[in-house]
Image (tube, rainbow, N blue to C red; front, side):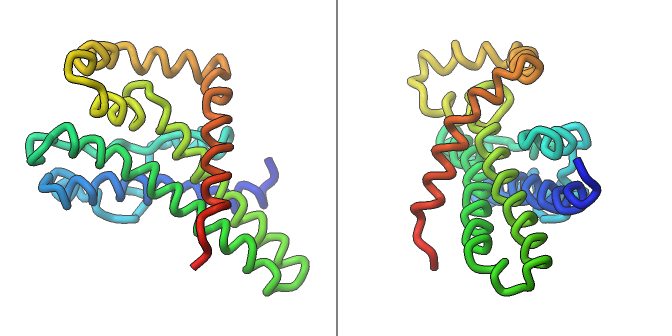
Length: 204
């Protein structure tokens, strides 16, 4: 990876993890849980959300994680529904951000000279790729990722309890998937679907 790529990628990574975790915290706050506010997580300041290893994974492999926002579902009127909404909020924010940067990718580089436009194009492309990668990674239904909480909240109660028992093994399973490269293969169709989705969203 060149120095130029690193310089362009780091702010894209910091923005992606910040908007992801901020959206978790703000959704929980709007549903009645003040935990994220008390912990100083209702901010887009990346220093409040940065997990160094997760950020490094995003830079190197286009998927990774941030420091999780703590959520107390007992503040929600409907804890199951609340946790699904909070868990969806992070990936949804990254998908929306990818859509926005994709719009800029179409229109903005042509406003500059060829040399500057190429740099702008690459920067915007990094933002699209990293936001889609972060969304896709977190949508995997493996604890402790957002996808596992979404799936848990959608399962019938008799299956939800059995699924939640897997949480203790989730980090080990996730690590094995990452090391083996299977996680990337699982993410590929999700990234493709999300990329097709944002390509069909209307420009405003």
